[in-house]
Length: 109
Image (cartoon, rainbow, N blue to C red; front, side, top):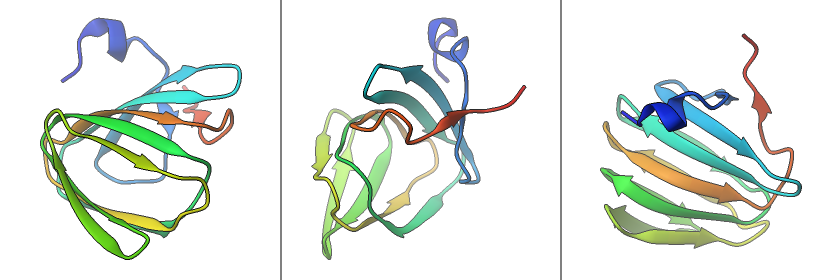
């Protein structure tokens, strides 16, 4: 669980089950504080560049058909337009920066 300073942020509207994501909106980027309460798989997709740091748990990213396992303290980078998918373990938390100002919208109240 993130501290109040994070959970007071608006939640991002992301169509992935088992995910809570708190959104910081920049002029040209978005930062998300994400946490997963169950094992989750994310289908292959691509978008603008993405950088993340793992705060807790594990994620297996398949980036351009190469599997990479990341754990607490690890960082990852996915360049713009590169196909990727994910297998995320229960309890996973990260901070992710998307180089895209409108990747996600705020969740409606």
